[in-house]
Length: 530
Image 1: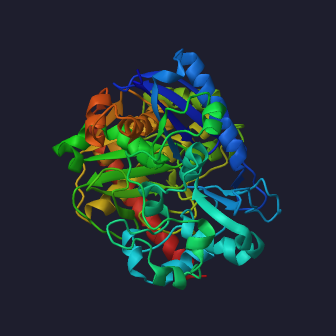
Image 2 (image 1 turned 135 degrees about the vertical axis):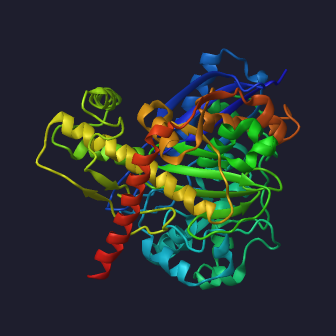
């Protein structure tokens, strides 16, 4: 009986696989590292064949741990970062690298080489931009495609297939060149609620009038929760599965995490007041609503990027966990940001905050103020050129000095989330509950701050790996284990623990937020004096 699902998540540094039952219980998971190349500043590249190999290793390992025969697997689903994979007309890798290495065929999501192209596309003012917050980020695919055509015309001329990474994985699994509605609506300026979804005049403005041919793009897209077909014999053997396994359309990793975190809220009235926060290297704020609510400097609204007849909007921070890692590396008392070192810092912060003489628990390092835009500002300023700011540094090189700086960086990350939520409120969104998932659930400082700084109730899902769970939910529908995405969300959600904001800390964090906004204004003033 086919009553289980395999979910695969491709992150920035690893491929992970999980095996789930139809109730959403995670029976086993495994991961395998993937390569990343950094040939130049702001350039980051993957080898897609390495990603597929890591996927196969992770799936086999998870299946072995679960102890299931392959005939128990109904479906497999994939989610991935919004990285761009380029192949020739025969499906072989094509270089996206200034090194010319063919194996480096994938531009990583965090790559910012296409900042100029993003600005040029934003300046067109085309109507499609109202569904990407009025502007484009260099992390989206259209700027990367424009860069590729301009800077590597030899690769562009040979291209026959260009995929979002999640769509590449489903192509490897099925041989189908179908594209997920999730990926192309969110990252390729496809307008899912209109026909045709591809706007030829926009492609011409972008200088990409031959994109449909070079990328092998279909006219229509595959809705989330459907099936693209079953595994090919070759893919089944590579994954350690069998040819009876259905393959679900791919997902953007953050959107899989949002669906997994929101769970049963997706099928009820709480959806409109709930928002998912997926925290890791970067942070994403994702909301799903019945009504279209356009807004500047947010990504979306995207029609049916996950749920049928619903719109999805996203805000985010390009550096969150990456900022904390950077603080640890740059400080004299820091070093390589291992989990053990992060843990020591977090423990010491707890001790410092508990010491007598501290009027308020949040107030250590109170003279330190940070703008966390060390990799640009994704939301709500939509400024990839924005830079980080630290005010209040002294000559302190002690470990305690590092801890104070780390604490205030955590405060800054939470203030950035509040800034995004405030901007969304201006466009008609009203959130009461943050459903937090991703790596940040392991950082108690951030969890505390997300509640206290935003004033929202915070829910930590019982199944902490919401990205894998959300992908499993969509695969469960593709495999026929649940009748709809709403049914899957309700049946596979295990609930979670809650944290309420501490009202005694509101005054202090309100003051910090005023300073935060003042620093943003001052940064703009300084730019104006150049």
